[in-house]
Every structure is written in structure tokens, then in C-alpha cells.
Length: 127
Image (cartoon, rainbow, N blue to C red):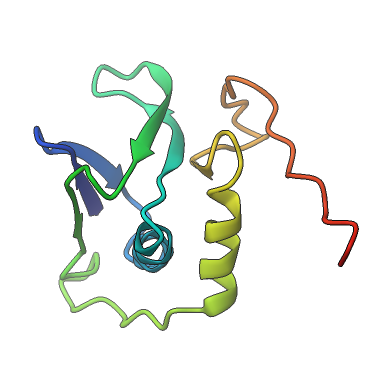
């Protein structure tokens, strides 16, 4: 399970789906933080006491953030090396401009709660 340790108290943010998303999130975060800008990471899932939760973390370059990666897959072998896809990174950077930021764990089928509707910003008419 890939993990982010966030803030001075090192809050654990778990990603059970392996290293792929976290690797792309790290690349997108690097681009965003290079401009000294933050973003929201909004997540849906189950809490430790099995309650459905929705939480938004404010990610900012002034707040400690540590990326931890799986070093073994489910069979005990080293996981596949992730090739960073620039399109995936750009999509995450674009999502960082939305009020809810990057969404993780939301599924229409599972009916995850979303605190408010998050429409993409209007297209620039000059493009």
C-alpha cells in the first residue's frame, strides 16, 4: 500500500491500489509546488472504524509531505516500475485548479458522498 505522510504529525493517507497513482501525484505535486501553489486532495473511503468518510487535505509546499511506495507486490516480488505519463500528470495538475482539487476514491456505483458539485473551470475563449 502506497502512503502519503502529511503534516507535522505525519497523518497517513493510504492508497491501496499500488504505486501508479501516487507516482503521478508526486510528479504533479512537484510541478504545482514549484510555483509555490497548493491544492486540495479530496478523498472518499472508509475510516478505521468502518464509517464512510469524505475528507479534503490542503496540500501546500510549506507543509511536510512524504511519499512512501510499495516495495513488494502481493506475491512478494518487486512491483512494476512506473513510467510517468505526462498526460496523466497534466490531468492531475489541471484538477488542482478545481475547488475540490484531485478526487480519489469516488465512484458513482458506490454512491460516495461529494460535498458539493465541482464543475471544471470555463474554457478560455481565446483558445
